Length: 277
Image (cartoon, rainbow, N blue to C red; front, top):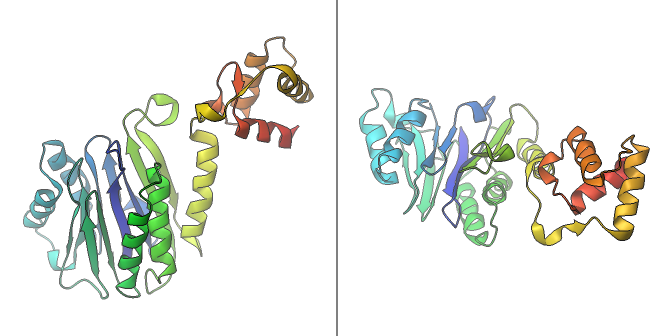
C-alpha cells in the first residue's frame, strides 16, 4: 500500500525516510529516525512497534540486517504481510517483504539505503527510485535526495490504487531549528490529490525558512546594499539606528531568523525584503 526509501547521507551524518501512499497520513505511521543511530520504515499492515524497536537495536550496535531479522523474529503478528526497511550508521541497508504482501511487492538495498514498496504499479517503481537515488550522489542535502527518489517512484506509477499522502523525515545531530534539535526536516502531506508534488512545495518553503545560509553567498551590509536595506526596513516600520538589529527584528517577524548573520544579508532574505517592501 506504500512505497518508501530509508537512507543516510553520503557523509553519514544524516538519516531519513521519504514515503508516499494511497493511505491517510502515511507520515504518522511509516517513518522513524534518530540522529547518529539510523532510520526505519514500517509498512504493509505496518507494525508501529518496529519503529522504537529498530532504533533501540541500532543504538546498541546491531547492523541493519540484524535489526530486520530481529524485528521479524520477535513479531507475533502477520509477518507474511509485513514490509520494513532499515538503515544504520554504516554498511548496507536491509529490508524484508512478506510473501503475502499485496503485489507488486518488493524492494532493493545497497550501501546506505533500502527501498521498499507494496501494492505498486510494478517493479519499475522500485527500480526507478533506486536509479534516481544512486544518480543523486552529488546532492549533499539528504532531504532533496530522498525527495528525488520518491518523485521517481511516483512518476513510475507508485501505489497502483492512486495517491493520497506523502512524508519526509530527516535527522542529524544539532542540525534542527536553532541548533537545539536534531530534526532537519519533518514534513507531512496527509491528504492531497498530488501529495509528492505538494511535499516538494513544502520542502522549498522549509528550505527558505529553516535552512542556514551558505556563507559563500552572504552579501556584506555595506554601501549601497546597506542603504537599500535600511530604506526598505524603514517602510516596514523598522527605523532604529542599528541596522543589524532592525534587520533581525524584521526577519524574525517574517520567520527568517535562521538566515540572519550580523554584518551581512542572505540573498534569499534580501529577495524577501524586496518583495515585501
